[in-house]
Figure 1: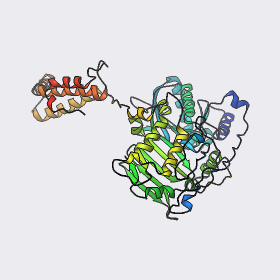
Figure 2: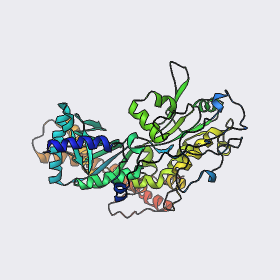
Figure 3: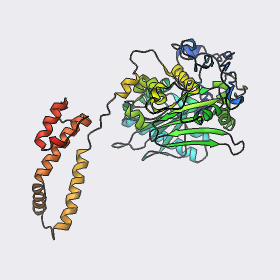
Figure 4: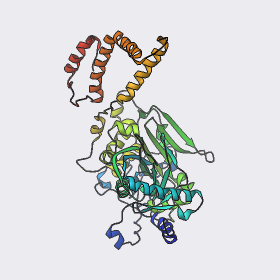
Length: 502
């Protein structure tokens, strides 16, 4: 148990540390802990000189940015093409107006060291009970070298209920009290307060170290959601005007398209275009920050604008892609290492193939030849600036599109149980009485024998299907590698004549 001095120190450390990055401090950080310098404000974020007049003067003017210049070291604003060819000059991208947004979620499969987990569970139980009793000073624990606050109640993640929920530095950590079989022992959510101060992959590496220090060995990571965003110093009315200009939207979205307006002002504040596994959200960041809680407001002004007393630009719009598990898996992004290599290719696919706003009305069959609308070219240039990395190991858009999703083989035990359940149901109707196991087996044998020819055909067909679609065989060595071999394999099944391949 902790002494009262330790508990008071934990509470003080939690309050102090939570305004710092979620990173393991280095010797350099400990020796030089000066206050970060406020970067100089950008003199000119963008200019619309010479741009044709639109619906309104306000919607066509871009306010000067209040964030610092700069961005990724290997991508300079000068290297990027102007957002439009109609007079819009180059956009000086502020230092941190793009990147991963809070909401990145993942699960970790692995094993705990039994003794360490037993001690950890005891500490977490005490902290959880203290939080439930209102004893805040007792609700903190030291986990992996950081001070975490333990919530009074658990939380549901997917189908599973997690007893322990820890929070620190904008990170929510969900720990299962008794993980078994397919239950992920640990889940995580990196929030806004974390990612506004810490690079996502640095935060992941820090969390990996925390888990390792507490006796958890990670075997597999699975990302379930990633949000990637940029902020543009324009009024959201520019996007509304571009979307309503005519048939200029190209999208593979088969979900919903919605615009939300403020009841007070009647102005559009949010635009969402969604599908099952991916969502595009365009919203008025100025309005969202103004109605946010004081902590979020102060953090936004300090981290994005460089000064807690800064005024939020009136014309400020965030464009955000939200990728869910199905979308990520389709393009081979399973863990954080995959994400780091595929980040720019993902937003390239989303902003080129999944959704576009065209410069003029689309003509069927020539959509790809029509250039982007100036506002969408602006967005794509911003995503390129914040996510493009000149690394030969990174994947291209073609690499992701050519990714082959290998479906895992189903559980054989589960299939057998399903089959036995069906046979049992049939036997309960067909047999008057069952007196012995041998009688039941005799009936099953009779049924299988009657269906033997059809069963043989189905088994042969499914074996070939497994190799083609799942890349799966018992020997892990595919027998069929070409179209001729597949057709030859299907010939004994008895129906090669009506199988068509494209």
